[in-house]
Amino acid sequence: MEITEFVKNIHYVGVNDRVKQKFEGLWPLPNGVSYNSYLITDEKTALIDTVDLCYGERFLAKIQAILGDKPIDYLIINHMEPDHSASISLIRQVYPKMKIVGNAKTLSMIEGFYGICDYFMEIKDGDVLPLGKKKLRFYLTPMVHWPETMMTYCENDALLFSGDAFGCFGAVDGGVTDEQMNTDRYWSEMYRYYSNIVGKYGSPVQKALAKLAEVKIETICSTHGPVWQKNVEKVISIYDKLSRYEAEEGVVIAYGSMYGNTEQMAEEIARELAAQGIKNVVMYNLSFTDPSYVLSDIFRYKGLIIGGPTYSNQLFPPVEALTRMIEVRDIKNRIFGYFGSFTWAGASVRRLGTFAETMKWTNVCSPVEMKQGITPDKTAECCSLARNFVTLLKG
Image (cartoon, rainbow, N blue to C red; front, side):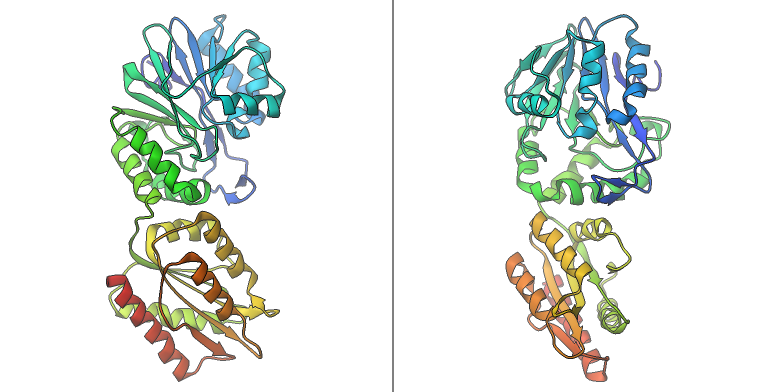
């Protein structure tokens, strides 16, 4: 059995992208990303999802190397984002009688994106498609993280084709399963992937997990990242934890600073947190760190402290941008503190206060607002904020 035939008659035909700099034009890809597709060879053949069109020829060559002159009978689409669906037209040209399998919302999107509207097979939640020895069952999982998303379960092999769920950033180097590689670098990228791509949809993820609770799963085939076999329980537990907004003890301090004065406040707060026994303190200067990494740690840790200077009677733009991203993801159950500075007219603390009210988190009562440079009194206020924060964090 070849390394890409990781289960008998189920082949990995995905591709790696080590060129794209930002996923969705937003999130950095220092380790690249994979677009995963899978081919089942039974009495009937089924292709599960496609890949980004820029890798279409490479993708097609992989399929043809396995099938030879045999046709593709079914193309099953679990998710319609173009990094997984953009090669549909190419595959249809080569296999014109191939039936495209999806739910009603999927098929509507295929027509909208690619103008294809024939040889469709519409399925509903729980429907079964026999391929011969293997039998596929479909589970609709809307809003994980698009309205059409679904998962395909191969009952014979206890194998779940999960779409974007349980995915992560990072190209798949060499092996395709977690048993064939060192997976250490993927865990932080799973947090970053979830928090940035799926993070808003905690409730739909929980509904999907509930639907799958009694399903035996020995292999997870996501559309990004490794095929999970050895770490199935760990992967599911991470998604369960993140979608319930459960967090570890620790504090993220995210701040902006133009000339270093606000940064001094952040440093004083961080030192006092450490003095009070908080070991997981993560600091981010928002002028230099991509927000995808900050959001990942906000999902990871229970505490968040944000600070920034006033800028043109507004909140410093990188800090403002982070607060909007947090609001969009509707992150729940965090402990929050905030601080800010100004030279002649203060606005940043007021605006962070409005943000705090919007999120309905547990807030440290007294923010610290500093005019111009730091003084012993302001240092003491920063330390007091940190001590009050720890009381709530331990509470």
